[in-house]
Image 1 (cartoon, rainbow, N blue to C red):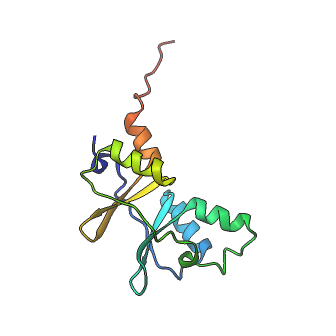
Image 2: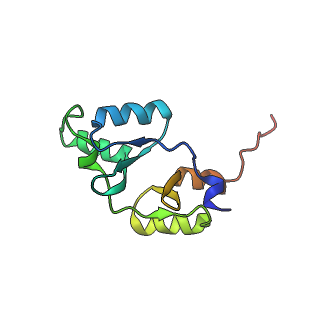
Image 3: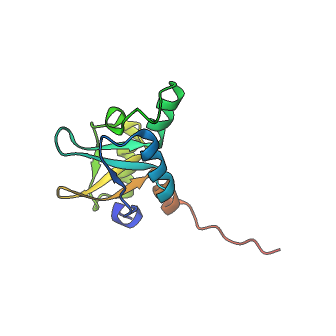
Length: 130
């Protein structure tokens, strides 16, 4: 199975000036665990994950003043839609992260997460007869 078959095509894109509260609200509303941070002036594409927000809160930082740009991972590993799920899982395992931005040329077209991969690999749940 390929990344294109497992990825979410719902790509939440935010700017680096979004506060962490705004980012968390958007991620929660769209039920996604990561947002692509587009900073055309500086680093290009990065990723902000629910874990980044949690770490900031755990440090006692104010989610209304902390910005996505401050907590964005800019050293991102990108996946191609033609990667196998094994290649994606290997990249995540070696990099120690749970999300990959899927790119088609210069455009983010999806995000694949560990959960997406597990959902594809796990046997479908069968109803056990009573």
